[in-house]
Length: 276
Ligand code: PAF
Image 1 (tube, rainbow, N blue to C red):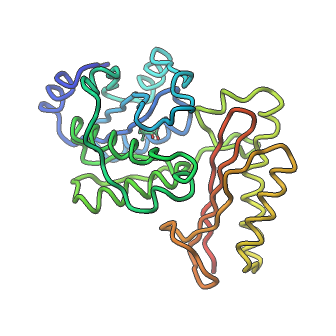
Image 2 (tube, protein in one colour):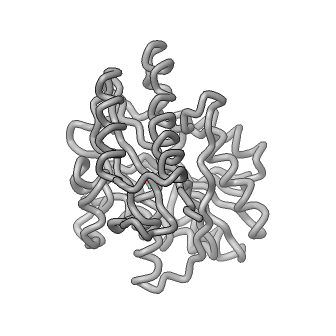
């Protein structure tokens, strides 16, 4: 496995290797990332994993500076997982001058997480486009835990006719249901014990819907109130269709999504729901 830091070296490697699957990450890898690498490995001859904490997708008061940077440990995990290349540029390599061109996104980018993190998805889309242009993968893997991110990247790939096939990886969970996330490491012991309540709230909604509940607003409100009563600061609980548009009583493929904070840590999660 090679660790490549410059765009020039990444392009030189790419010129000699075809059939590349790409797993973009911000590092501090967990089993969810490694499952994406394993899935990518099955679908392509070569796997490139990027590790880049992208400043464009963090708001001014967000956790960019304290986001965990664990390249050495990540590289060991990726070596075991069978990645061919770790592309780990530093910020000045990717942004030698401040980025002045950005991807303009549809209204979905300002809803759900976008309503609480202005500019976040534009920052994600811009770096993903840039990484795609550097790595030029045939296939790229993203986790369903970032469901809205995946929807936006899907839209971008379709709208710009990008020659990249997308692979969506299932959310990996701790035994108590908590979705694996690099941000879980920020939780103190008390918060970690409370954190599975987010998944539990979504599971309750899923069960309610599968048992026939139709009043989505009431389900969303009840879950948000329960979480708030347990000390969460809730950004949203929302039931949408699988494309993240407003769902109605006839929609078969739904997703329930939530974002909420425990102390300083913002967690997100979602569950897909297939109605009979
Ligand atoms: O999901 C992530 O880790 C990031 O948003 C991504 C896709 C690597 C872009 O920085």
